[in-house]
Image 1 (tube, rainbow, N blue to C red):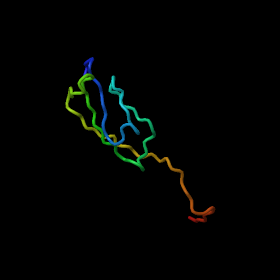
Image 2: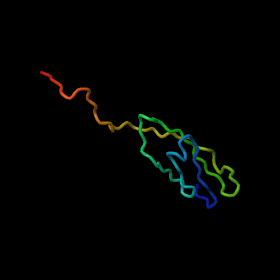
Image 3: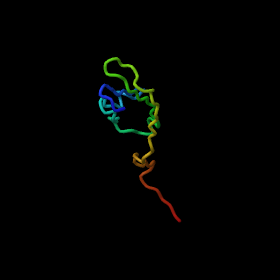
Image 4: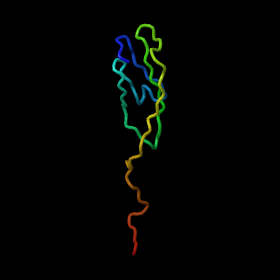
Amino acid sequence: VNRQNAKYLLKGDSVGKVFQVNADTGDVYAFERLDREKISEHHLVALIVDKDTNRNQESPSSFTIKVHDVNDNWPVFTHQVFNASV
């Protein structure tokens, strides 16, 4: 929306904890590292409302942020020495 009186809002469980939206531009930011082992998907709803009345200027849009897995854990070995033969 390209309206001067528009304000962007974001709703969802992780809003304010992990994600925030710039109310003027609609840019969404993550403020912590996303870890697939903790949460693999974040379900959010984007809204555009009038700054004065808080009435919707458009229908809310639901979207999902899917977190891809990255090998971020170091390998753990149960013994100090392993013997093997091929």
